[in-house]
Length: 265
Image (cartoon, rainbow, N blue to C red; front, side):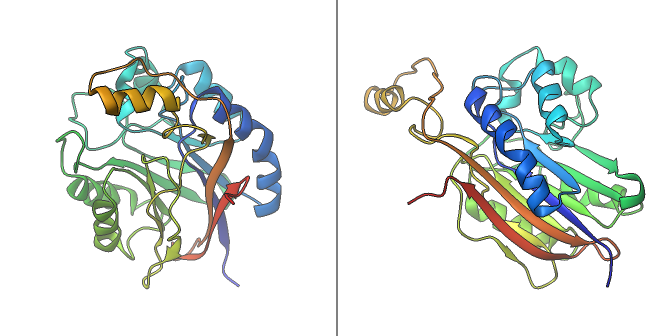
């Protein structure tokens, strides 16, 4: 039987509620799935906007190996130092190269092998940054010399853009995991050529909310059509993640399982 790697990806961790629940649950999931490598999207850790150095350390101390982000990572100017100096906290690769930080990393698990992680951001209904398809092609060409296990966080608004990228990269990467919308989708599957896919993992954070924001504030924003100060909700906190298993020799995914706790009913 070929050697396999168990990989766990945690959806957008939103504020202290999401961090606390992750701290409470990750060890038991690590044991259940015998996790070898853990990734989490951390762009919302700091009260819904960005992530600070001490918060990144907190996630690393829990057993998370790589932190991906998205458009909200830039909401705190202090993050620039973290992105420039911490190789395992990524920002989307397809932002202009003049910005600080790294868009991909190859993580060395010693005797278990290496895992490439690429962070991308979509352009549909979002900032008109560089082409994520071309950025992915470029990064894969760099990583492929070191490992066949490649995981992509596609941080995007549009389902179609995420799915198009998945078909574009099918068979060339181990998994494409969608983030950003904060709502888990029910389409976790393995594409015919061995790429695990889910449109959106969902938010690890408060669901008594409008995608993490207090309901009353979100309603006013839509009714009045003017800005209101963002306030993070606190209740009905849920953990959203996805587990997948990958063959080390081929980089192909053999299993994928969605994890939501507590489950929606």
